[in-house]
Image (cartoon, rainbow, N blue to C red; front, side):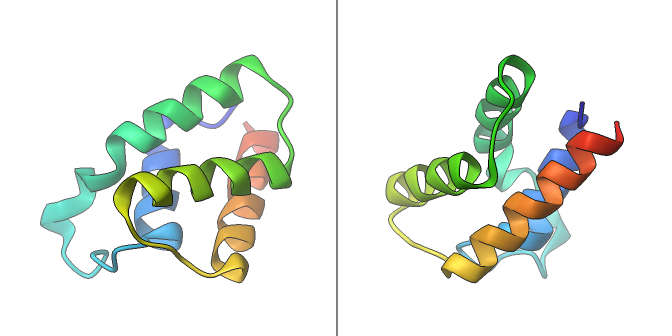
Amino acid sequence: MINLKDLKKILFEEWDPIGINSNNLLFDEYDEYAKSLYKVLAKNDISSHQIIALLNHFESNIGTSSTLIQKKQTADKILACNRKS
């Protein structure tokens, strides 16, 4: 299981739909989304498509969006880290 710290890092460095990852002082910007996603990962065997759907939902709440490619890469990285752990 991926740890929460690694999940936060992936969301900040890879997903980053508002483009803030050049400012490390804002590292905690996506913490609530990371916590929500972490809970889902802990309870379910989740697919890339399901992670992308959650990222879409988060982006809807933020009022912005990233590209599908960006979300797919983020989902794949999350799943790869989740399998390693």
